[in-house]
Image (cartoon, rainbow, N blue to C red):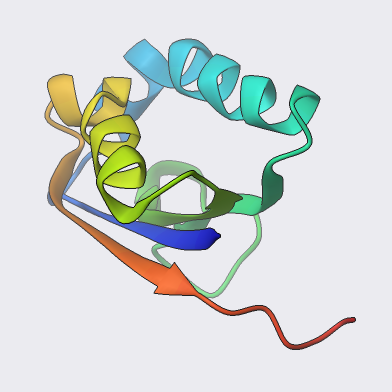
Length: 100
């Protein structure tokens, strides 16, 4: 089943993000290589695809996991959690409707 993982950043998280970004992306790339990733990306803190020093306010990942518990475990092991980038992580089941 698919699950939505929404990580909400602490204020001024950009420096923390950059220190562990490569580790964060490696985990997401593994999901992609396994054919489990639907989409992933950050939320710019301002109305720009390249927010510069304004940074990001969070991230969204939609991927396949065997259960809600497995998705929560995966999400809580993210380097952005251990580095203090995320102040809150929400994991919910997700039903993809479109595009089909």
